[in-house]
Length: 293
Image (cartoon, rainbow, N blue to C red; front, side, top):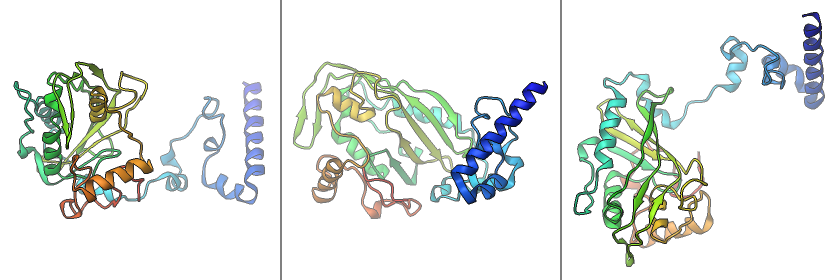
């Protein structure tokens, strides 16, 4: 025990001297504000027992997040008057079976959506519910892949927002129909595709309406057989159309602006016009543009 205490004391002293050397005159301020375990790798290895951050108010202030414009979706910290998991499962069931037996696109009932609904993906949006439905219908993606299975699992409520539910999706489908994108028609490839997993989030408002929906880029781009393309881009890849899908890609941004702003969404809208985007959405970033806030 004495040897262990001596070792820990020496290690802590050594770590303190290293930090002081690296930080110079600022070391005293930083080390007085935060416990040593935040500065020393010994904590990560389990040698030093760490007190919870809540016990160090000055350090908690360093790591605490500032208010964010998307806090609007927390509705003042109110508790949802309904079971958000059950509502989300119901919504998922309605949207997962959105293709009829004849391969026609059938949108989920509009009663699910709030008037100020927004959809945002990593390179698509912000886009209104009406524009989402029109774009999906014109593409006929679900008609081209009538056996699509979104492979949804792992529903969980956001611990920081009781109105928001996250879940994983891994799409599998066979392309037996055609996809029409403006003047371009992609014939059936009869290819069976499996996309990489992505994360979807559904945020409800206190009235039980979906106000915000988002999807992430692929979690692991090496999964599946679509060369890293996820969700809709995976379906297009299965049709032989491999599109760029990276945030900040200059060529992709230029293509999106040309299609949406100049040709008014001839190939399907990537985002909605400013008048269609509700006031609570504060970001001016569109499509694949980098975040502006």
